[in-house]
Amino acid sequence: MKRLLPALLLILVILPFSCNRGESSGKTEIIGEEKMVNLLIETHLADAILSKDVNTLDHRKDMALYFYPSVLEKYSVTRAQMDSSVSYYIRNPKIYLRIYDKVMKELEKDKGEIKPKDSIE
Image (cartoon, rainbow, N blue to C red):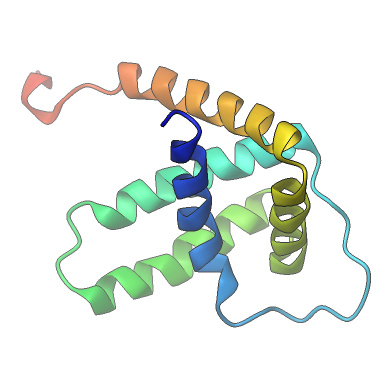
């Protein structure tokens, strides 16, 4: 069950990047592990924002068009690099699980630092 969570999270990460392939005419570099950890953390945070308090599907799509490219831009990564990197790490599950262990630890740490809305003074 513990290994199922990273697989499910992967699906959530791949879906936003899988539609409308970007312009890729050549070889793409694989994103390094630490950078990939940071990208996945921010992608999951974007997923959380999109799944929370969004009234309509159209509004969620509009927000997604902003959030996901912004994350890629922040790390100077193209959509093609992200797609290639995810594919590479899927084919190398030991590395991928190591990356996702770091992602999950960081998200859990961040979760503990967020105060519920009711506790804001």
